[in-house]
Image (cartoon, rainbow, N blue to C red; front, side, top):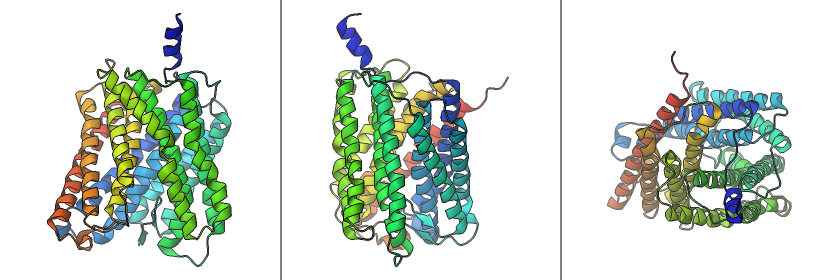
Length: 458
């Protein structure tokens, strides 16, 4: 083998198909993540309509808007992202402590189910706290607690069983990137415990839960971003893009991406959990630290896509998901630097970021299905799906950013939005139209994946 051929081989950022135990566990987490999207999607329709001009005047959902938004966010962000972390981590795990792994999955499934039914068990009293909005009911907190226990057990198992190699090839570096994400999640769990122990007991309601989840919520975004970067490298490779990044450079970037998280103990030592400085430093950590690895890897991946615009035959869906993932994550990041105050530009920023991660995970779902024992997706609908979903979400966040520039506030619905200027109405109308288009894209994703995983009829 020639030296340049060997270099190209070692720079391919993919992983081999794991053993049967890892495949089954990874498939289990995938089913949980998809179930969360299905249930959360039902609430999405109500959330979008409750903020869309004309519909908001016909349907009096202002109170239900907050309850639906709590469940929507917790299922489509928290559960979906954490469960898909379980997909990737389990795919890259050794066959040890399998009972711990299945117990973690069982607890997470039970918690998700209880969260889903909690709005229908009595008065919800929703609180729109950041990162993990809550319903003030025993049923909801029971579900959230069980899901949290499942996640904690998953992280502890992954710390012991995540496969790692010598880090001298692209595949080895992907394994390292996944382990970095596990470490970030461990820090998030530790931060949650420290926040709980250090919180001023005089805080109540939304202020209490804001501070409780503030540190861990910010840290958990580093896990999601890290796994998104792993997905970008993986999807770029399988779709035929040649990345001009050596494994060593990517290894350094992964470490650099984790470095802000290592400051977390210092933040807890220097600043009281209840203080504004504590919250400010976590905002600065994510605002500037989150781009340390994402920007160079995103630019290198984009360059590789344009250098080879035509994807490898059979991997057009993965390439489409990759392109829209980079686009949405980049736009969301740019909007983040435009934020001033608590208007819907904040919503536009995190929607862009989380949709960027979601599209990367969608692309990985398409790619991993045949490796997990399901059918490969090749339908025309699937080829259009990332574009439909991504375009709708792009319209959604542009509408929000536009409206935010004219003073539309976050966490409001109906007449409380105060849509009086034509610019505000147009912006929120674009938001609503984009949201409905993205819902169609999300439904297509779930339908084509369902067709791939359902048992074939004899």
